[in-house]
Image: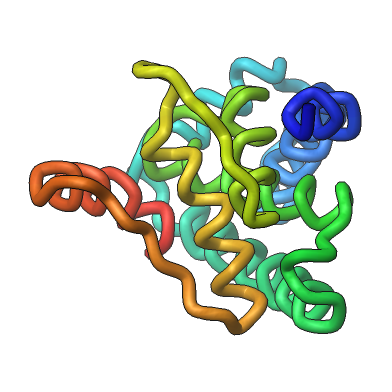
Length: 171
């Protein structure tokens, strides 16, 4: 029931719009004309890893500023009291980093499941639904709160593969 309630609260199209606004703002800051590009063209620019040092520098600066702002808000209220706004802001930041570093963004199920985990709840996620990436949201939110943020996995193999897949997003 928590999953259904949270799904109703989190508006995935709104997250996608905010994410696209952030990507277009970065391109605008670089002197490009994002208004002439389709959403797919914008996504394609950001999914080409390491090909544009200026883009990477602006992206790092903007994500750093977003993270600092989000950290202040989360530390004031505590991660257990995060609102839809904090979840959306965190998801947009993660999606921008995922797109640049890994070439994809969160799906709705990953956003909702990650939000549940961040609130200390349980989410049953089936094989192939992106559990490794789901852990990024609660780790990010808990780290911003100042609380310890740990991901526990069941095998050494998972520890190696999961850390290798998520490390670039945090860097």
